[in-house]
Image (tube, rainbow, N blue to C red; front, side, top):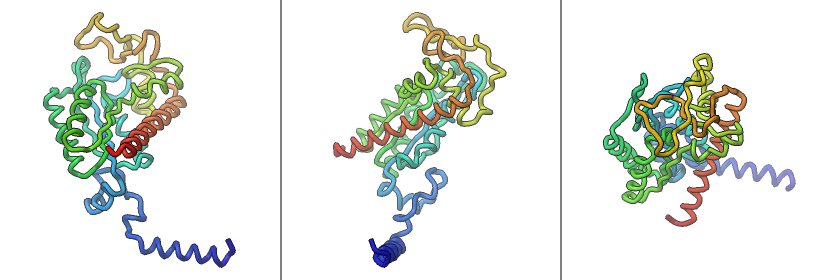
Length: 274
């Protein structure tokens, strides 16, 4: 392209951009639903941002890291991947269905019927807000069955599309890749993810190996409260080692895999016309 034609093309592009509505030429000023103005929300959802990420967690003991690990992890994940998956981030649902760890100091549990009713109301509200895709980023295993049921019901009832992601299970291959062994509740993997969010949330000086216990083989035994707050998926594997460098790598690889899943699922929904 000759210089005069190149200059003319730039001028035309500048004029086009100048005449575009502000909402059409700008990215969202924020991805957080609690921070966005209602007028900008109306301009963006669903025409430009059809997806919302909903973090969900619980309060319960997590070895030598924070009781709110199951809250802080999906919130950090949502904020890290929101722009990549073109989504807004809904305020977290912090309380969940905590079972055998609820007895430890700071633990809190919600009855299942109350929890399901509340999450259902949240999902219906997001659907009424015209989001097309609701992605539930779950941080707590005790919530899983309830979330799967409620998400499926709301999707069937409203036509919205839902995806429930249990990141620690979905990314078990990343745990093996980064650490060379399996993890556990408050184990190497989950503790590392929290270290990547904020190193001050992990307390190596408080750690001792007898805080950890392998999960019992299915049907073999159960105890209430559970006798350990670090529950290893496999015997001899997953003890926290507090490697800050690996923690950063793990955080990014986990988020990358979850983002890729969301993008792929939404693409397939769209291609299928559902």
